[in-house]
Image (cartoon, rainbow, N blue to C red; front, side, top):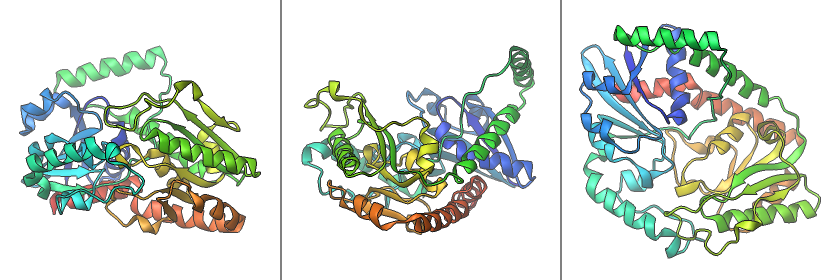
Length: 378
């Protein structure tokens, strides 16, 4: 039986979907799954240099053992291909959420958006060129992965007695060099997954709902908000908020020319975002920062509603065209009003069923876990 060990650290919640899949397969006795502290990786031939890395956010280190074969795997759910990790040199298999074929197969720049300027792209082009030159010889390790999935982690209060028990139990297991007990986390994931499934039952009540920040090409996001405002004036049921996000060194278009006092930009009212999104005719999303995936987009696809977004530069392990996704590149977002007028309640229900079916076919947590296993032992 295949054995999987996940070496845990903080700040890797983006990979919870895969983690949940492993837990489910283990519960069904299809694999042997355990979790250990990150430092324990040194007992399994992982390079000590990993522990010295300053930034392990969104990265997970996993050992797969199939009989006498061991594979050291790195799952990287950073936003995009531009931010792929130098830690690729220490992995046998590198699962990259921000996969792009031009980069990892052809070792060249992808086709960026037509509306982006050289100023927008300068940092990215230089960074990507340098990294391809330095790490391109390791690209044979790269595997496509999945879009950053809906959030599974939700902080829930734990009473003092339960917390004392958990802490004591963890200390005993650590002293005995045993794996970590993840039963409470598994229970939390199961509960959260049921909450997500309930969102699929929302009734159509709005046209568009969006809760967003200016982080990542802010002028582009402001233009989308202006499109929403015009649609609102025309009578469409829009609920949107665009909040201020600190500019990034990567984002040369920045917020330098934008007065932060204009934020938040509001249309209507966003009270319970997930429920309101589930009741919306369209999910409309500007591109993710660095062209990466956005978990609000994945949430919309999980719920099943039709999605409009900028052209996807990141690729999943399967063809994303199985979903009803409309990709835009003009900054006027003309397709949005067209779809709002064309899609009726019957169409909406049909699209939801199709998207839900395909999400469950390709992105069910157990399916994702099985994909990881298949690619790791290939």
